[in-house]
Image (cartoon, rainbow, N blue to C red; front, side, top):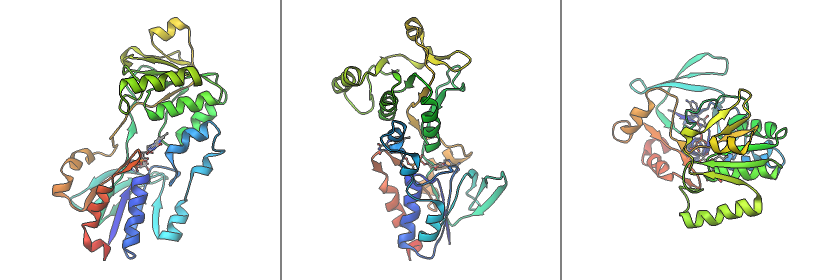
Length: 296
Ligand SMILES: Cc1cc2nc3c(=O)[nH]c(=O)nc-3n(C[C@H](O)[C@H](O)[C@H](O)COP(=O)(O)OP(=O)(O)OC[C@H]3O[C@@H](n4cnc5c(N)ncnc54)[C@H](O)[C@@H]3O)c2cc1C
């Protein structure tokens, strides 16, 4: 019996390890696009601002350790392109670009989310970054070390952590948020005002909010800034623009979104799981526990 787990984030690796804890025989294969696994994305901003000395410090395990200690195969830098649920197999592209088929008895989808980058002119320019993976963090840190100013798009928790980190590095930081308040999904407006006041007055971060992203564009062919009319009037040119728009559940594999919708009912051998902020969706693990034969 083989279980294939797609994704090596908190959800994928925890699921793989939990299955191993209860089943010593099952072949477990984790496939991931990522180069680095088993790291804490939550710590990335703290490495950017040097509070944690290096990105290596936030990596907990390597694929070799998973193999040696848990008998779990982790295939990195490989993207699953398609799932053939009729024939219980996936097709993935390995790091040498070979397309490989792999059959499964159980399939776990733990593909996480992707930062949503709105269709703004210039977002592909140099100096514009997304922040999700450790590699994104490495690129931002390297670029920030030669920059004087930054605009962070999005005042959710990760946007604010990133803004704080860049400020700690000594950059002038402006946060642009399309909602009328910061932390729009976490705080009521009165609380958000208190946090924003602290960040403005004590930390020195500037905010531009209630600006819909349609009137923002990345300005200059060298990727010098993310500006809207107001920023242009202020004469601000920024060299670094980390994007952290809300994470949407997006997957690049064709066929996946449709069958996730019908998953629970029609395909009990496919399990969809993800970890989100401080709440790991253990409900999904309990679904695994209800498949007794894999834990014999
Ligand atoms: C900067 C930052 C700070 C954060 N801070 C916190 C915090 O303080 N507290 C908190 O609780 N949460 C925090 N989070 C969020 C938390 O990290 C995520 O909720 C969690 O990582 C989600 O885990 P996941 O396993 O569901 O998905 P992910 O970690 O997104 O993992 C998805 C995996 O799927 C793989 N994948 C996707 N598609 C494919 C494919 N087609 N083929 C192969 N592999 C694929 C990816 O390569 C990746 O390995 C933070 C996130 C970031 C980026």
